[in-house]
Image (cartoon, rainbow, N blue to C red; front, side, top):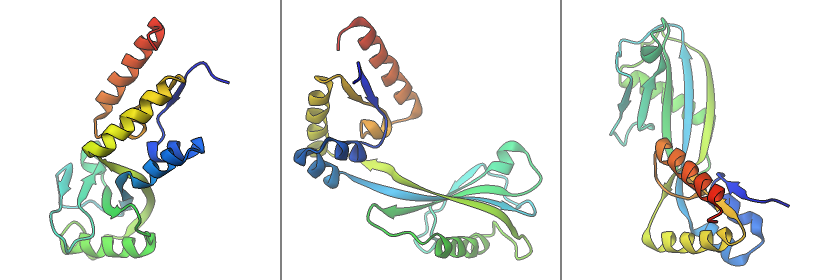
Length: 184
């Protein structure tokens, strides 16, 4: 039993919890991509001074890299690498790591003597939601039905919308204000 239920988990996963055929169908049709993120630590610093760079090259497996060491002013290269996949792709982390290291050398971020000391791999699933008018209308209808039961799905993933962290904070504050007033 709950007074209010506020969901921020990805809507596609949340809808599967209701044992409702229409919700499950919508969940399967929602479009998004996955992103494999590597956090990489190396023995020595890179010559790159940027904070992040987009890589618009289809021959490189990643689309964005960022340099934590340049932001934090540390003496060893620490960075993130983002690799996009479709929602149905199977991801082989070991293969992608090898491609990534090869491509970091190819674009000049790594020199041959700069060894990887440690890494973590995270799969964001979903990462970026794909929005369209048809799904937005269906999502709005589902959310209205849930709100009648005092269930609220908010945030980038919970509301299935492309937005910033600041937008999510504003939405949460607005919901709190409405709940506090008794409007919902």
